[in-house]
Figure: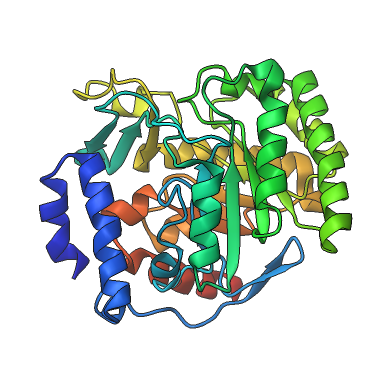
Length: 341
């Protein structure tokens, strides 16, 4: 069914198609029509960070920024759903146009800029959801918050979403908020993770449960920078790593008419780069910390490649746009065969 709808969606502006696609899936869910979109995969349970996931294939942050479609997304067979990135205050994001589709590369460039309704809207939506599965909440800082005060925004986000999340992702790797990636610098990161870890321990005591925290990093880091991040996160109280966000590298799409557009590139051209970072971090961290692989997954084979590089879980976003809900089951079945060897 998605194969019939995709040409219509791809005829529209990408951001309009994104919103319309979400509304269509929400309508299908409410009418009980989701079995026409895809068959949910049989369970393939895995335990990561002390959480049991029904299967290891999740929805990446960014598709449902405000958590307005959690039930609909979960009904498509994802083993977990991550919403956000959410900022303390609502913000419109960057000026439009800010999303560009590159079908010949199975890719997207976006410079949305953490456009979201803020923490209040996200919390309301989650509280209205009936979803009882694994929910990740991805937090960020507002665009007008200087980096010296970024810790405050993340602390506000962590405290607010903590009771609702199965795990919390700290996003310091989007290329679309000026200066955000500077928080990945080793000494800044050490201080930043330490402050959030202290707050998490207080929240664990207050709520009677310790929720895992994961750090999401960029794919555009040099080996020395990866080494520094690995040392910092291994010494921190963080529980996992997500590799990776979108890339600012345009070498894989050189010559394309959208190659000069600012923003993060995702989809097929990101696969090799994000997987290389995943492998490099797994080599540095080993079994000390689970890694979630995201970036460029457009087939079951891509999901397996992430696991072969060291991933414990995977997430999809742009691949879901190009392939539709069938991608979820394909990835689960490919991983079932891989894990069964």
